[in-house]
Length: 461
Image (cartoon, rainbow, N blue to C red):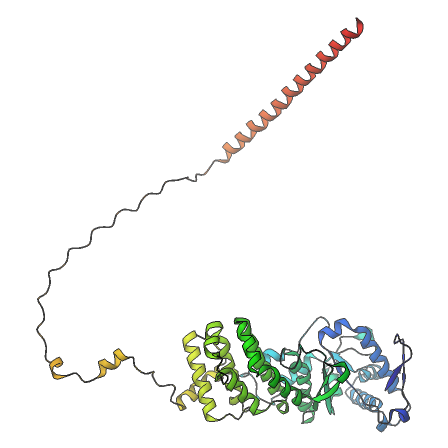
């Protein structure tokens, strides 16, 4: 919508609507803490562009920047905000964490799945609260939130997110995708979850795929996710490489499943049931015969238990429609690993759910008896029932000899030294040093006087 005035981006000028060929799209930027800290100059240029576009004398249907600015300003004034402040926050399109703060906190919150239910607003309000610090046209007011006439906080970020139809996240390196860290789901996925909370439906999510600069393209997040799963995290070659890493490899697999769960919680449209099933078949059931169970138990059994826990939570919260056989296998694996390696989870709701599943599948019954115990339960033959004559009691054995007294180990002995002795010793030491210096000085002076007297006699003769 704008073109730079010069190559050094000293200013911008709007593109004419006749040349643009479409309405001016309104965009809101959700900043990570890293971008906020590193690119304040870019934020200033973007804010300048918003102010310029909102001031154009164009019809609202051809200029959504102008239309949304007027709409939000009117809504803020109606809530008791002063017109000057209302206009500034209506023009603000950049939001993020408070200055000096980082993260949406959605990562830990989403994993605490016994503390929230889908759509209850807890995760949504957490995201909107943490990401609603404004970075608008007036840099003096950066990292601020707005309050209404009644003194209550107004979430301007939420006002700007209303009506969002699409959100875009970029990827420019093969080292980073949607599952290697939690940032994609907590920031891009967080937007989707918040918009659904505000408008009742998720926006379409896109990934700007710039890994190959010569073939840059825009892909839907669900397509990008599917390709990434097939090419990396559910591919046997990647799993083999993770096995070489031992403990670190188990954590990478656990993080992958947890980040996949994060996407599931943020936007149901990005994750499919068959993708959950593939994680189960590859990581738990070991469809590629890589010895996954043995490797997990050797390197980090807790990781396998937590992977099974996350899958069972996806089933419990009705995200994943798994079949009965899969539920049974996950329940058995979790119970086996948890009992064998003393795995702990603080999720009491999950514990109750697993117990219920185990009882339903007959897994909560006592384990099979050992051969020795089983033999004890078999009917005994008659000859064994009839008492046999007992041998004569042996005479009591003499008591063992008394133990030898412990050997006395001799060596240095630590004794307390009176401070008085130490002080006296130091006085004598310093006294001797001073006496030696004095005697040395006297001797040197005598030698020097004698030498000078001899030199005088030689000169007078």
